[in-house]
Length: 313
Image (cartoon, rainbow, N blue to C red; front, side):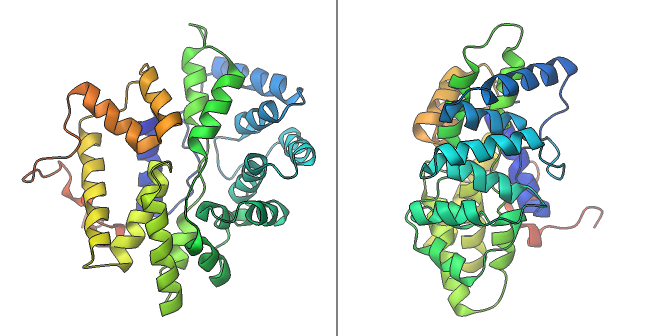
C-alpha cells in the first residue's frame, strides 16, 4: 500500500469517525509477520539510537487497542535512558504512550515539550489519547511548526531495514507505510468546546498544523478541519477548502499509489508528504488542482463530517 493510500485511510478514520490515527495496516501474511519480527529482534539487540527507534516502530501492533509487547516497552526504556535529551527518541516514546490505552506516564511528553516546545504536535501527545487541556492547547497554539516527524522516521526506518531484497520488498514497503501518526481526534474534540480563549487557541493551532509543509497530509488535514469549523468566512477557510478539494481530486486520479515510485518516497523524506504527492502528480501528467467546474464522484468527500448525509439517509 502506498504512502498516499495509507494516508487516505487515516484521514477517513480521523475525519469521519474521529477514531485513532494509528496506521491501519492491511492483513499481513505469515511470511511478512515472521520477517517483521526477525527485523524487530535484530534491531532491538543493537545499542544505537536509530536501531532502537526502528525496533519500536516495528513492534507496534496493527490493532491500536492491543497491548504493547513487553519487549518493546523495554526497548523504549533503553532508548530514552540512553538518549534522555534526544527529541526524536522522546517523540517516539511519547507517541507510543499516546497510542496505548493503558499508558499513564507523562514523563515522556513532559520531557519532550520541555526540550522542543515549538512543535505543536508534541503538546498533543497526551497519554492514552487524553484530550489536551486549555494550557496544553495554548502552548500548542504558540508553536511555530507542527512536525509529526514522518519523513525523519521513514528515513531512519528505511536505513535500518537496509536495501530491499526482491523477496521481501513488499514487506519492507508495508513496514515503512505503517509508521504511526498521532491521534488528533482528542484535540479536534477539545476544540469543539465553547469558550473564546479556547477558540482562539484552536484557530492558531489549526493554522500551524495546516501551514507546516513538512507535516503529514493527515496533520495538515486536521489543521484544515479546525480552520473550516472555526474560521468561517475568512481566507483561512478558503485555503483549507481548496486543500481538501485538491486532495480529493488527486485521490480520484490515484496519484501517489505506486509503491514502486522511489522518487515519491525520497520526496516525502526531503520535502514533506503533500509536496511529494504534488510532484508525483506532475510526473503523472495530472494537474495539481482540479478545474473550476470539477465535481468529485462523491461530493460529500468535500464536506466536514458533521455536514455529511448519514449513510442510508
